[in-house]
Length: 257
Image (cartoon, rainbow, N blue to C red; front, side):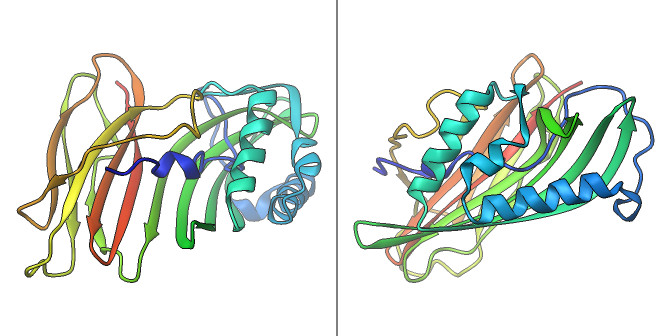
């Protein structure tokens, strides 16, 4: 049983800029973005890379909300905890598009995160990509929502290389396939694993997540899930363990009409 797993590296979307579900005008390419937007994103990226919490939070308004349930105070506390757990962490923030909505600016970005944590003499490596939108009002972020995210945590001398297949979006109540295929031949080695589905929530990000693993006869996980009956978002994870390493791969599944 793995007593503490991927949530100990969460939330990966932090600093992956976002906006809520509102009608959008035609987005403009990043090279046409106003100087104040590009400067703000550059300053935010730099502050995150030096783990300057006060400088990062200066970009978040007092009324800030995240679609996952975070307010400004919760966001700050969770980001502090995330940084405390990582031995190293780096952010690369790329502007994909932008648009004006009255006096506000909406920016869609791709945030790439790389992190390393040393715990009990063992190294854990995190990679993550978060695509999101953010809304700036008066130079501060007031609302965030993740469009898509993908994260992978590995440890060991030779963790499994995994190919994951999961749709980005499904309709409420629909079935969906979730495959996590180990690319190396299994041979005589033992492979353990489990597929895990969790609701996207601001509660208990760093709480332990004990899970029981099962022996896998095939070279990976091949599951069929069913989406909730209403619009929602879910974290879908594959946990795969071999004697020479393990991998935990998580993606966000959007359930929408």
